[in-house]
Length: 382
Image (cartoon, rainbow, N blue to C red; front, side, top):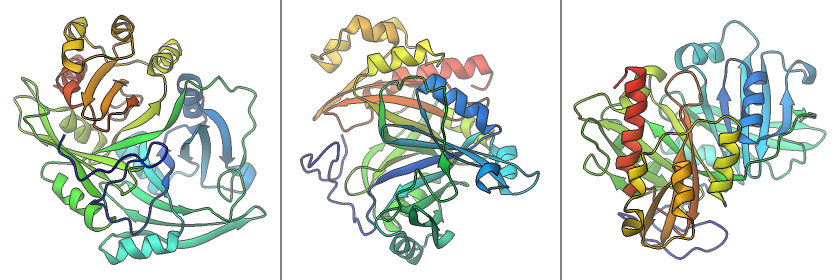
């Protein structure tokens, strides 16, 4: 594994990356906001299929007239689903161009003003100057910058706020709350960018946000007979925020990154990797609730023990669910990828369980890409 210098795990799931310069610093992912065509119906899907719980709401009943937002929560993960309530404006443009997709990756900080000043002084384009928002529960300060495509980072300072989510939101009471499926936190989020743009955004995260490059994959690592891509993984200093950045590479046919760019109409968040402590239980529950996963052929498991060594799990159970396994110097991981969860072949989720490993499943790239190519062939986009 090509990494920056690593120290031992210090607490929880954090890994310290010494090459990162944590001048912000980032405490974790605060929320991820998707612009969707129908927030109420999307909320029902994520509750039913992914086990998210009703958390907060903003809309006409809370004095918000231009949009409706539902906040879903599962352990440390917060998803915000937002739909415009007016016919014009940037949210409608976002939907028309991209379809349902991630607009905001919000990052939890101690000081949102300082985070904005640090990043804009290093070249970031401002999206939102620091603003104080308050209600009877206290106040938050938020600020924001532009990143790849039309994705933005919002810095959220909430140390003086005791409300359910943010000012303008109220607690969302719902009779229908299916049981969680065991999702814990966001492990990483992957961005797809166009030809020749990967290093631009790698430099952005290094110079503007103080991230370190911890892993590099080129077209020799990530390729099949037909397609290829390149990827670099950027992390902040405490390892809580990890952003792999992908770009296409030359291949005989259209890669998954090219397909994404074509249908999303530009760069954007390709997938959200969510962690679990028991991937078999999580995937079983999600599959029973209707989530579709990529198909992994049975022969992937024929020499699995030779490739990854001894593991705790029953290989026949992993084979039944199509769960992939990979090992690095620090341990092993288990992972599985959903099919796209939106109508366009763009955004999907990864379910990941780390048992010591800090890599990203390099040994599974061949099987993963072939699985994705089978789906592309079915769609007629390979």
